Length: 221
Image (cartoon, rainbow, N blue to C red; front, side, top):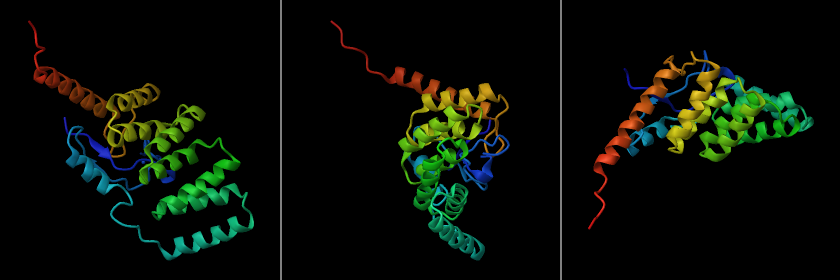
């Protein structure tokens, strides 16, 4: 089976998801970057981190995006409780690589209407992008609690656990829970999530066996 590819950043409004058809992803946006990732080497993780959206440099802001941002900033300044304007502004910051500003906009919107799982998912993606992995997990969990069948936060939770926090068992559990909801779930590159889960579960089992073989023999009498 081909080596599974690891999403560098998963989910988002255009994403039906950081994934699409199933869109699994962290709303993680259209044009998600993937890189081959192995659990046990630091080199691959470093490469994946460098490829994450926004890492190589700020995306180019088009004149139209700049105009939209300026208009929405004025709108929000005039009406700080305009939730939709805050969300739209957050999405534009998301798309243009302004992660911290996106976090601020989404947070302000959620302070007014806290029960929006899609906005929570996008917020989690932004927290991941700036390296705040625990906060990303917190908002993904809140999105899951609000909308248990929404695939993006579950998939993205697994991404953070597997590739950022090196907690593979918990990551596999998150993905298994998604597969219970949608057995045909796929990653953004179209690879069945079941194949990815099986691959990493097998890799973990092999790693465990190797560890047992290499373990020192206990001293005895």
